[in-house]
Image 1: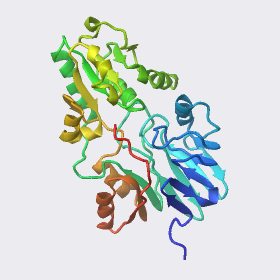
Image 2: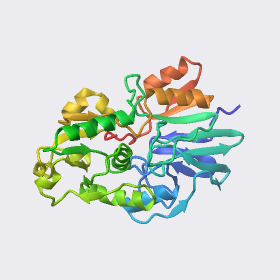
Image 3: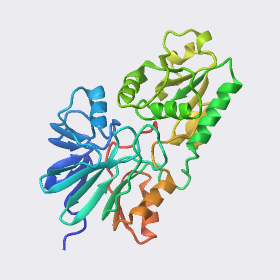
Image 4: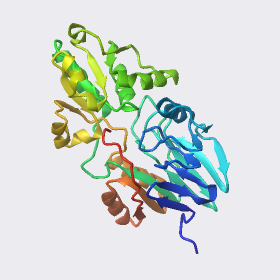
Length: 332
């Protein structure tokens, strides 16, 4: 008797779906690629054909140029070879999807990156019961329990209110995190102009094109120090302490990331105000999702694999590490 999921071949460069002759999130150019979302550790250019949500394809086009695209809307079913394939919301960033694979009476769900908490910039995670759940484990340790997003945003806005003669420079990943912070601030009542680094402009424009309301955004470059006092400025994490930031009015340096739970990470980045805001599932979300889906097996793509594998095994859920290469965004 063939083992469960024998038709899926995890390889270092991605997950090969043999009866569809297609790869999921391959790190090398392939003839057929199924892409879960637009982050660079999952979406690469150079494939002959790409299946993804329209939003993910637009993100890839923004980053790599026009793609040989095959758009698949959420819930739509396509058939490649002998496999029925659906893209289901993952709640990670705009257009992010889990990939549901049905073949030979078995269902495998590849989560890509995901989170369970609300995010006003993307469709929420949709649980799909399955035989095999292929999950990430970026924050797969019990120490990673993210606080409520609203609490972190309120801390940020209170700090701004308390320091009217300074600005707050927030490091945020260009895709997903920056736009989410902007909308979360709007939801907490901050409707002043928000200034952004030039590296964020194209993706903010793309989010707006897909109907995500970002409010009044303005380029930070070329604005006088006086005008930037009492303002929030968003920039890529790599710009927090470079020459670009030195022209700002006594900035309070912040960074939004799940890694800000680790104080040493904040100190290494010279971050004065750590904001624990993540687009990945924390420990409780990872384990509660597995409980909810009740898969027969759990396969772990990347992250803190050992702890999540141990948690599964102690609950009589078979688990394995896939040891895929090139995944995990340190700037989350």
